[in-house]
Each structure stands twice: as structure tokens, then as C-alpha cells.
Length: 127
Image 1 (cartoon, rainbow, N blue to C red):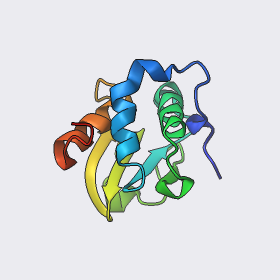
Image 2: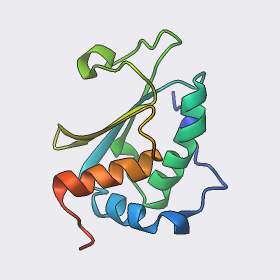
Image 3: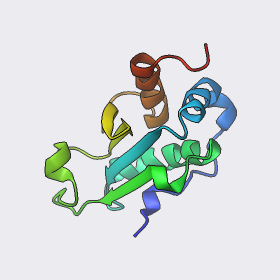
């Protein structure tokens, strides 16, 4: 069941995130985003709509977005395997290997944080 919290924020302004979007777009077909969250979670509802808008803006294929809906006890698929303790958590994988992870309170918007980590780990595709 698709998570409502990933519905793109209609007020999100792509122009304000041009550099972030360039990185996400450059790795569009290489990165899979695994997202753990719950529609009941206030942190998820506050941050994931903007991330959903960023993913939509750069055309991330739906096959590269894997949603894991957790219950209010933060239980669900992949929790133990990925060591999920806080939500939202977004793991970016390339060829099945984790290359970046956003956890709940990193201090930056999810898309910005992950784009920065992808740039550090995989190189700046816009340079």
C-alpha cells in the first residue's frame, strides 16, 4: 500500500534545490531508495512530502522507490535487517549496496542530505 507521506508536496519549489536535483537526476537509474516510515508519524509527515516531490521532479522510476510502512511500534519489513530504529529512514543503495542513509533528524532536508552523501561516496556527477 503506497504511503500518503510520500505524496509530493505541491508547494515544494524545485528551483530552490537545483544542485540537489542535478545529483539525484544523474544517479536516477543507479540508486534505489528504501524508505521506512508511517503515515501516523509526525516527523514522516513533515519531511517526506518534500522528498516525494524531489523524486517526482527528477523522474525516479517507481521500481527504484521501495516503501516500508511501519506500525506505531516501528515494526515492519526490513526493520531488523537494516537496523531501523528511528523514522523516517531512507537508505540509498547502488547495486544492492548501501551508499547513503538518512535517519530522522539529520538537520537537512532528506533530498539535500542524500544528494550530499551520494556526491561524497560516488563522486560529483555534475562536475
